[in-house]
Figure 1: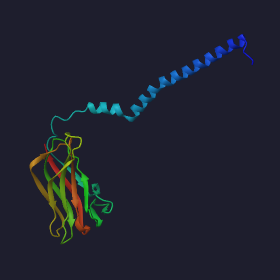
Figure 2: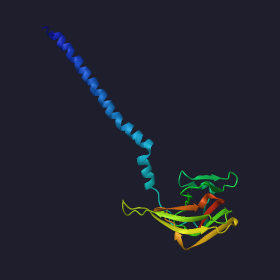
Figure 3: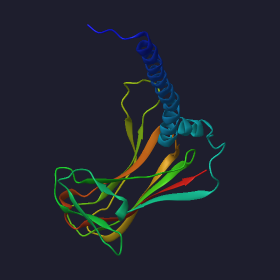
Figure 4: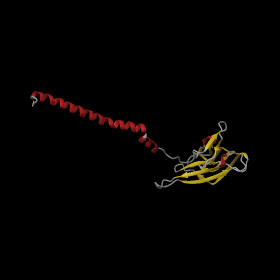
Length: 211
């Protein structure tokens, strides 16, 4: 069996040493690059940056002054189930139910500023049915920050409805006492109901609110 000469052994050792140093250098560069990549990814995702921005937000000290309205047109409503067919007039923005289903409801979210006081709820629509009426609810859905397993609580604040077959109509309800908006824990919705999907349509709903 051949053995390496002292000269060959002396030459091999520096080569192995150089290869080992090269591997160590590559590993050090990879380790140094990892935090930079992670930081870039975090910044791109907006995680900590978004949290910092939210932490800097403050609630308004008082509600906006005066009287204002939050409105949803027929275009803004969405159907409750896939079995329900809805349509909207491209010129007028009214909307109606085309095919009946087990859930003849549609809904629209109402973004009302915090601290405002809701005073009136109003519906515009068309009713050409002598036996069916179109109605609308103003609903509040809240989930207080009290328990992880708590369920949202839904409250109907007002209900309005057509009657008979008045053709084009508008009806309103007074909310007394006024309800103060808590947009931190609650959301606000308009639900419309068109039983039978026949000769009934919705043009608009609005909520009047004051300071």
